[in-house]
Image 1 (spheres, rainbow, N blue to C red):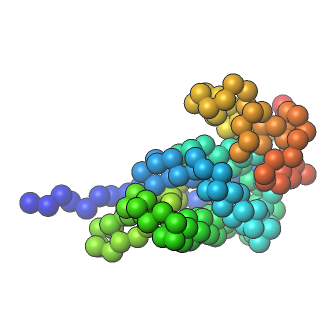
Image 2 (image 1 turned 120 degrees about the horizontal axis):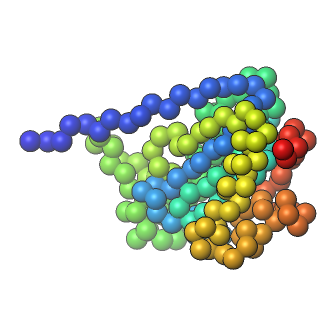
Length: 191
């Protein structure tokens, strides 16, 4: 007897122009794929390109070993977070798989995903759209930014949020530029 096919929740994205979004990217099987500077830089490069090509401002970010958070503001009147996410995810997967095949082929089985139809894919990210939330008020926006900045401290990765390199916390608190360009022109003032 075989197990019934696994059902996945359908993610409904509400594409609202000029509404901030909190996005979460989980690594495949919650593995620590973002624990190396190389992988974090691939992700940062992909986000930077996507910000420009999709007319999106980045308000905050934090890359953790097993997942990443970004808070963005789509500037376009017809935003497509699905296209934005796809351009980021595909770029990272392509770079990661190419790197692993060339430099660490023994790591490839950790990225292997046999799909229900029998096809094999190599993944960096968990299947599906990830966590996506509209942030409609200044209070909710700032609460989310504070939450993601505290993430490395809560997880015991550093003592102070500003110590975590792959976060925008130092940009906010110390006015030190980080690995990603923050654009706060549309960010509401802290309530």
